[in-house]
Length: 417
Image (tube, rainbow, N blue to C red; front, top):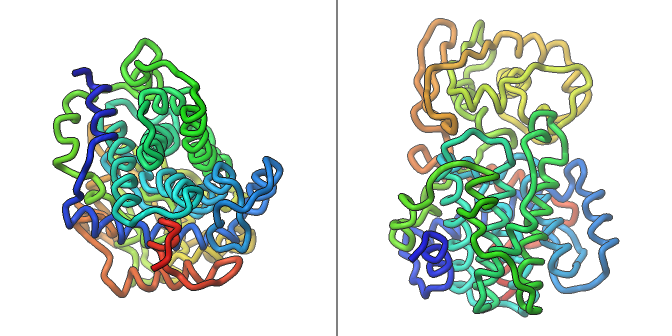
């Protein structure tokens, strides 16, 4: 059996989720949907909604934090944008993939279009999609050039939705997802809102891949390891060493949540600065990927998207406020001389970590004190407390465009008790 055949067999196979994987899936769905609700009032959300409405009206699928409903592809697009646009969504750190974002938005859309599905069915499809997206990420040995949350996300999400619908030809679903896979790191470099748009388009593409396959459209099948397949163009690496664990070790249990609405690579430093107030001098000794993702300068006139990935701004904000509030990403904050002076106390130094996809460990020097961060706050090894998670959820839900009761599993499955 080829590697691709093994992945397709896993996507189609009956699975009984271990209790831990099911519990983590429920917890992460709650976190993801809360973040998506918060994104309903974020910069760019109205533009994405307008674009989705222009694709066609309908009332199939509800939008997170809004009264609107759209056909499944448009709803997946809007909801995925809202989930990722505040940089508050969960991430599988070894894979460098926001594994819940595309998959949750796509599964939510298809479940509602089906008229509602059972919880176990939805959670199993979600876990399968997340597993495949993470698999593509952990297999990569090259640094990010394409935006992996979108490119790996669409592959996992399409197979999750194909499974949910019950399609027999998942090879065509995978091929049609590959045909639409896109998104590069240029948007990340520039701090552009096109970054969450790439996640949005990946969720829409996942639903579209299923619709095309259901209508009889065929596709190339060697799209993971072929001459122009995923592991040739988007990332380099070997899938085969990781395939044996499919169905026995669920990567859903490895996903980290973000306490703060900013790039995950910044959270090691922020966790050290939290509660310290203003400090004199800070050195962040970080892996190359961390420096590449968030070690960017504070720029005049920077955008909120850029600032969420700007370590000096985030450090200054944490020293001044003691937390990171998404409502502080404004021109007034970016031009605040006091914040800028605090951020200037930080210097970023690249360590000798040879892993080009590593986010940890990190080491901080704070006023001469050396502090090692082996596991970042919010990871499975350093989980948020119940109080921290509740505070995040409360803030996220308060940002909804239209407040409403929050029942995450009913929202995901489209089914009420």
